[in-house]
Length: 278
Image (cartoon, rainbow, N blue to C red; front, side, top):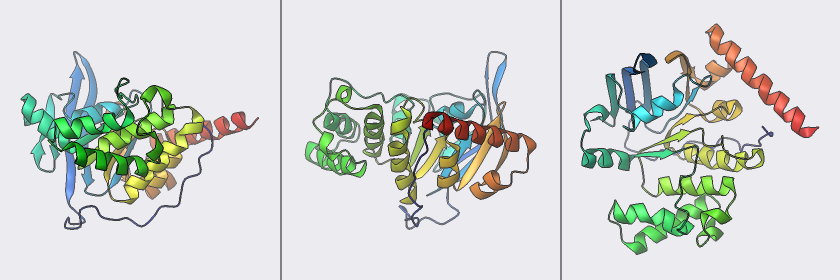
């Protein structure tokens, strides 16, 4: 991984000024999920307050991405409770119910999933017009503002195939924002990018967090997770081994397994930067 230059964290701007500081937007309690006889999640407890940025870290296969998919209803756990702003996610059984839920939960995946035959502007306006019922003028006005926000104001008429991976991922973030979600889930959004384009995507996410957008991130970018996160959850083997404020988890973890994981992750990070400089 190339060394990233991340901007200093700005003061938080609350996007929900009437929300209390302890207002829990997302909660998971005792969530269990198994595939046949293979347990994947073994009693996940997690809470995210409105306006927080939370990172889920841990080794590959520890259940991180599965947690995100349970939050927005893509996967149904066998046991436990999941609530988003008071909505019982597991109780949303019909297509209209799931669509209504996913209007409020944005999901940015590893792959960009843009429509290749549509322009960047069309990729941003199609869902607000068809799902939210916005007029073309309103949707396009929002889309241009969001493209400026992710530093792609000059790419409205381009097609995804003409963009770099980092540019496509920023378009995917802008498309998610166009739905004005309460919560955004980011699933390893830099894993498919060239090292040179990772920073431009992480900077956009960092700015969203600084503005008070509630985010849950699954990431292997440890330096970024330490910088952006209010709370950090370390998972292994389908359980949350340790969680706490970012400064505590990265500065003085209490669990030996967390400490070993971070030592190895930081060692790989440093080695990667040295190799690329050589």
